[in-house]
Length: 493
Ligand SMILES: [Zn+2]
Image (spheres, helix red, strand yellow):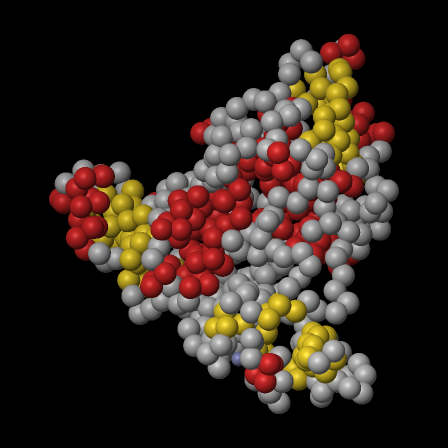
């Protein structure tokens, strides 16, 4: 396919994909692929939503695309002054969220997630004595964080015995991939059944093609998989996905109009609603609601799809996710444990907020110990998970505490979330989050929306788990996330 790579990518790997097309209708019937391509496709499920919004906004052969309200949410975080977040690192964490499964993706022939480090690297305090304390020595997942002693944590260490995993599917397995990105075992009967289902009677219309896919084209495919229900056809025949009618908002999985009655915490969101058409112009809320929205960017796609039980309406993603959950780990995936991780990935370590109302947890890092030993006239440090000193010249092992990059005082405990409080935030219908200012709110009404004051009313929405899920779902496909929320759960004052 296209040979318009940048010089640095000229020698980059390409991955072959064999497709069977209906040459008259310009439609892909199905594709056949091995481990390299299927692993790349599955890696989409490991991407945090923030990474997806960022990659979708990039140039590739397809123009930048917007993903529901996620793109505007992401964009608003990129414009947010750091003073509204707990630490300088918070913004970086939201704009470049890490994946909990990066060790599986780093060996892929094409890895579009560029946020991890290879090999995994951690950071210790610049001050040697601080790393050798009897207790309370810190380990950071980001460089140049401020240690509790005040020094920078810029001493890079790589854990001993860390292994990179070789992707997701078995090396010898081959697969059939449908136009909607369902991944099926490659057996003859599957192909024949598919052709029958597609109503192919005349074999003359069928043609075989092989394409070599570049990194840029993998980004194309990601964009199409978010927008189109026929991703492979749009990809191979370079059709423009028509965004408008491809994202129906399926609300059936939530009972409409019923407020959640669980005993959990609720956030209060005051929505300013246009009475005449029941649309939310914007809402004001405290930092807990801003944090909920920010946290969307850190959630891995596979976990979100799992939570929405096949009802995300996001392009082909539900089909991809469902087909993987039906694949046998004995013959096709590398292990049962890996399959479970892939269909419901957790957040990366340190990326969850402490008050997260959505059922999302993070992967915890192993307990690491710092070993120091004197060699070649200097101290060397190693990071190990073993409690046993490796040789007699080592110091006693010191268990390290993981620095919370969201902690304003540089420790392992005090971090809460991303949005600094107490403060008020303004959130538009497409989830643009900004610090609240009454004056800018009024001029927003005046200039951007031109709504007469008499047409405005305030509605209060109490956001608990159910409402949180509804906003998350709406954010994937709609630019009216708050209006959809209001339709589903409202209580007027
Ligand atoms: Zn220190």
